[in-house]
Image (cartoon, rainbow, N blue to C red):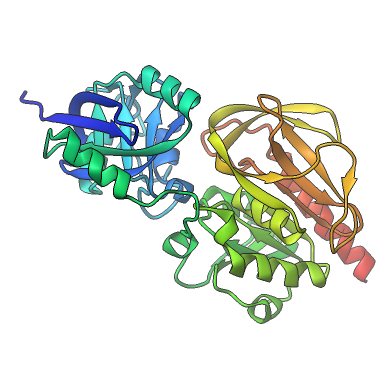
Length: 374
């Protein structure tokens, strides 16, 4: 079988050669690495990876193929995909097609046969940076020029690229207990599913939704999803969340929704050196002292004091979760009204499921608020 040569060039000039994987072409994006050994399909279809080139640290990717059921959204969002040793053929009873065929069909440019361990170590030491992949040219200098001219992730406003174009409704499974307005900043399909399993009717709104449209469904709670880009650019979602908090509607946010919550409380955000991505990140719940293994996908974080409380326009707030690898803030809560968020992904479809209890916490928050209101 004839293989097509490909090159990968980081913005600092670091270069590796390999073989084309997926679509033949050229792409640029932010180079990030994911430490998950499983769940590559969920990674590919996670809108939070929009405009990022994902380097898989696990060497063998694609061995379970691809199926329709495990997609987290309507398409693959990554800008490019990098693996050391893609599976030659899938072997799984649920597989419907190979990963390579799926990448080709959706026009995703990738590269294989490269030293992903060296790339990961380089990014850990130097920080996330832009990268280019080409299987149509081996001109390193030309690709490097395109990489260095491409936009950086800092300052990127990408929510409008990934949000739903129109409202959709996911009905509750069994008896409907509650109604939630979910603001789609790049939501994953498993999120409304887990809420529906708990008797919640989920109204999935575009990011441009107004507070009046939210109030029209008389929600028991409001949810802000994960999503891509720099939270410092998300002025619309921040203003919307402040309107929600002004009305003391129960709130739960994850990932980008945690960063928006932090901004709504008056906190700042910052870009991490190389981010957290994968399904094996240890997080401590400071309210219970329990340690969870969690799924992450974030390159930005909230700047908040880990110890004690801090002042907000809505009363005192506190950090509820921290990452045990680097003490990055992984959760926030208000003390005087029903609102909390986490930076990681409790809906992790590929696992782990240590944090699924957070949806139950949200349910209890809404039920308690209904009792008080009544």
